[in-house]
Amino acid sequence: MLRLRDVRKVYEGKARVVALDGVTLDIGAGEMIAVMGPSGSGKSTLLNLMGGLDVPTSGALLVAGEDLATKGEEARSLFRRTHVSYVFQAYHLMPTLTAAQNVELPLHLAGRPAAEARERAAKTLSEVGLAARTTHLPDELSGGERQRVAIARALVTGAPLLLADEPTGNLDTARGEEILALLKSIHAGRGTTIVMVTHDAHAAAACERVVTFRDGRVVEDRRG
Image (cartoon, rainbow, N blue to C red):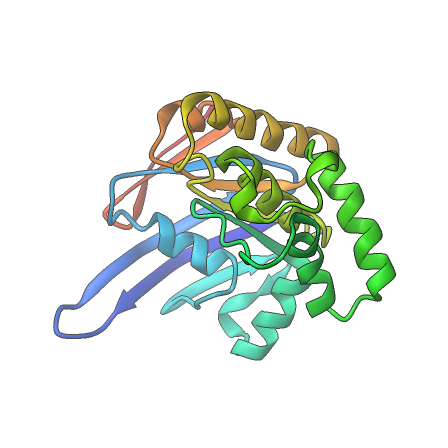
């Protein structure tokens, strides 16, 4: 699913920052892995590159067989619509849209018919345990429920790669456990490839593989 070969990402400015320093990494289709490391270790940069939000300064980055390092912004945007979905710590739900409307949104942006978007959103919200909350606005939902809506929004397109950036970071322990259990269920049931960035060793332990970064390099790659 993902193949990185000697990937470097350098930000030029008053202070030159080497965010990734020669990363070589393979992630197979259907894996669920955690990426850990201290702040500034390159985790978020890695996620941005995997999702095609940015391109490496040098090296090869293949996602589903496509070398994103060679694609322009428009081509990467089109690629993301069908291949990549995101879950964020802060949910990023539209506050004026209901849970169902938030989940439908990426399908509307992709030009899918309204009836299909409604049907798929309802089915996906049911999958994440929110069949009874479809008409609620985000501020009428708990933090855990909001994250479930965000996960449903990520799943509804059927993208084979899910990138999760600190998905339990804003949740208490109990709600965090629920979200981890849901991600594991999605991984097992759908075969979705999940890459989760986290500072939480307990959250990382839910994954079958943990890759640790420091100073822009992989320093450990272990399986559970």
